[in-house]
Image 1 (tube, rainbow, N blue to C red):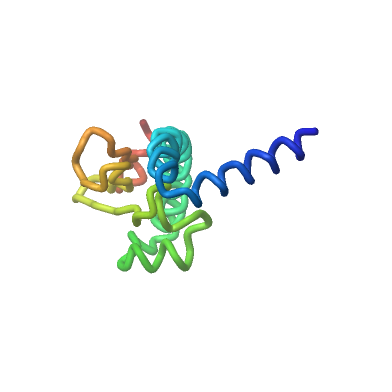
Image 2 (cartoon, rainbow, N blue to C red):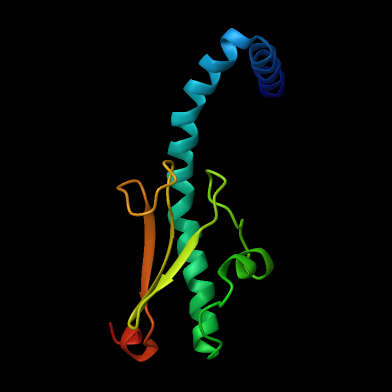
Length: 127
């Protein structure tokens, strides 16, 4: 029964997307849901990403020099955030930050989500 309902919902969505006047209405109602789902997924993804970078640091490999390449080659998750943009990595002398620009695509705004960690492993272990 559930499979039949899902099939019907998919067919209704496909028909709705084929009609130009309803396509914009459907797309407008899907965006808030996509953003909500994205913000539910992002914190876990960023923590996993930071954990994998911590392993690199513990092995004295340093931060990835080519972060985009590292995301595609070595990161175990998707290299793009739920909005189709690359995650970013910034660092200072004391910490590094991995993050996403969020739905608006602008870094440094209130919808960004970031995870920051200390670079000095001995200080981090003593926290």
